Length: 137
Image (cartoon, rainbow, N blue to C red; front, top):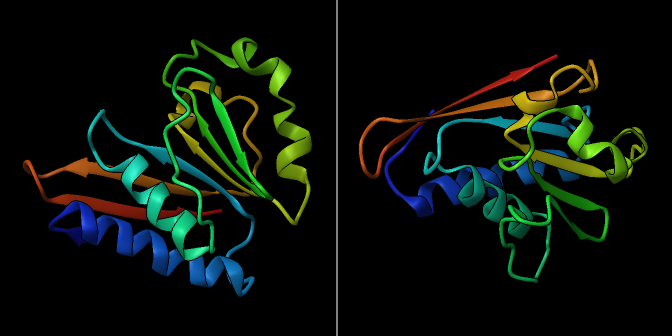
């Protein structure tokens, strides 16, 4: 899929939220990959809005994780590897079927990611356009 603006990237997140809320997306672990500025956090903001989250969704870059009810937004930009996230209890979080877990920079913990996940790849085409590819296990 291609988006031409931040608003379109957010709308794509909102559309995916409809499928997640209707239990058409399993598992509910979304792994996001892409360079800085490729639209990952913008997408997560749309996803959260589509799930009915009213709070402003900010990237948890410095604290690694923010929780909004059963929605977990994890940003591993500052993590080096799996050891850096040991205290977060990620396995417990994503093993609960009620939880929706979105992980930016998921490649940093690839050894411990669940086998069943949805992977979303973000690629900058130019300043405003993005190529977004979904892949599910």
